[in-house]
Image (cartoon, rainbow, N blue to C red):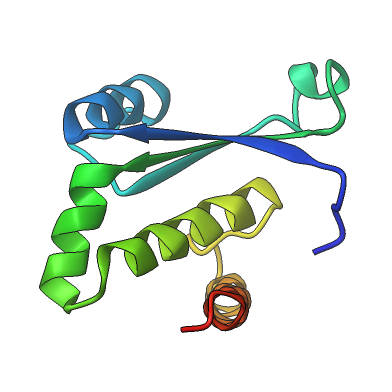
Length: 120
């Protein structure tokens, strides 16, 4: 992915915690499954150039989505983590359809790679 020496933090919350962040930073109501806060952009980017940012995942959302899709909880967490990391790296699925396809392809490729590494 072109960033072998980068760092990120992972924050695992419940729906209440991620709802608060969603409202405070994005002015959106309700919980979401994953939020990314890039640190490689904006005025804070020079503080620590090795820091990609933060990925915040709602464990409650992940559990509910895993149950609805019949997917193991751990796989859903892997998927959400990959999704969040891709946002930190500048991928976006909410812009154009081309960008969304590009992100989906990369996400699927990384997920398959991770599953292979885990022996699944």
